[in-house]
Length: 290
Image 1 (cartoon, rainbow, N blue to C red):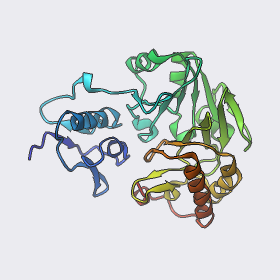
Image 2: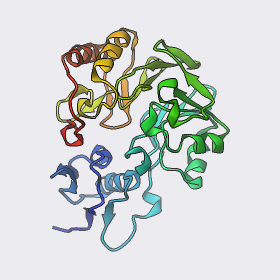
Image 3: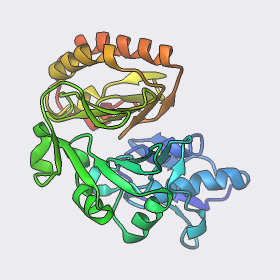
Image 4: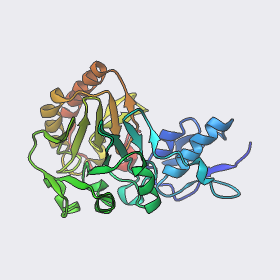
C-alpha cells in the first residue's frame, strides 16, 4: 500500500483532521493517523481539506506540499454557513465559521489562523461586520481579524481579560441580540464567559460548551476539559436549553451535526439532564469522547 499521505509527529490530537477525512484519518494512540490511502479524487480532496485545516500542518504528503488549488476553504456547509479551516495552534486548533446574513454581510464566529490572504478569501463572499468570540480560549486572532475587516469584536465579560479591547461586551446570563436574527446566550461552565450564538433558530455556534461526539452518536459536554465549573455548566444548560431552537450544531472542538429541530431539542434536554449528574474532575484531554 502507498504511504503517500501521513500525519507527522507534531499532531496535537485536536480532531479536526478526523472530522474532515473520516475513515481515512482515525485516532490511534492519542493522535491522528492515516489508516487508509485515498481511492480516487473525492477522497484525495478530503485529505487535502484535512491538511489545510490542521493547526500544526501535520497532515502531509511524501514528495512535496499539498497543491494550493486543493485548499477548499472557506468550505460551504449550507447556504448560510461556511467552515473557515486553517485552524490555529493559538486556539488549540478550534474550528471557526462564517455566517452569511440576508443583507449580504457576514459574521465570523471564533477565528482561524491569521493571514492576509485568508482575510481576502473570507471577505470575498461579503463584508465581515462582526467577530463573535465564544470564549477566552478562542480569542487569539479576534482583534486582528476585527481590525482587518473593520468589524466589531464581541466577548462576554467573564472572559474579557482575553480581549480587553473588545468593542462589544456581553453581560450577565440573559440572551442578547447581537444582530438581526442572531442571539448570544451566555453559558458559563467551560469558561466563566462562554457564550452560544444562535442564528435564525437554525444554527448554534457552541464554542466548547458542547459538541457532537462520533463515539457516542450524541451531543456531549467535554466534562474533562471544563475549566471553570461543570456545576455551573449544568446550571447554564438548565436555564438555557428551553430557549434554544436550532438544527445545526457547530462547535469549536468536536464534530458538527445537522438534525431535525425537534430531535435536536430532545437531545439538548437529555444533555442537560446528564450534565446535572456530573461532578468536578481533574482536567484530562485524553478523556474527551470524540
